Image 1 (cartoon, rainbow, N blue to C red):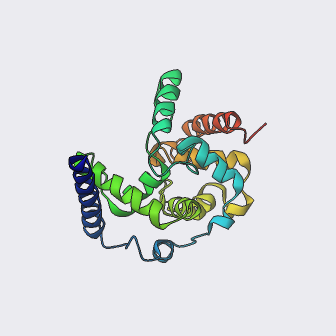
Image 2 (image 1 turned 90 degrees about the vertical axis):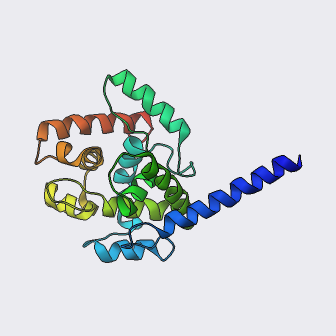
Length: 215
């Protein structure tokens, strides 16, 4: 029993230590424990708060990007299994396995390289984000900092770029299209390919219905 307790204590110490190391060694553009939403807002023009984001857009993003966002702790193992089933059913990659929190951690602090070290860093940063910020703050930062293609950064700029309107005026169909763009901004934005954007939009609308957001 003493050995088991010692191993658990060692694991906790290593986890905390490595987590602190990862956080301190990330890109110094942002400090994860120092009012991160304010830092992101200072870098992005037309930053909007969670309360200003249309509910249809929130529902669309949750449906296609991270269906259990409001209930998991940053890593969604059930969602990973669900995404695999959906992708097999559709015969192509429709849903990814990364949560919104994981994507935010990668976008703010890490490079796009696909290495084991980067994935480990992403894991610790994900837990740190979940520990320090609410789900609403995480989703707010994610939508404001994401790239939507065609030179549009953030949801406000994307709304103006693609629909020439303020975010508050978006229809449910437009919200679905914007949510669909997130999977591949250079491929699914309507300026690059309206046909692919519409195909992706249809998938998002279908997922929204499956999740009870649409009749």
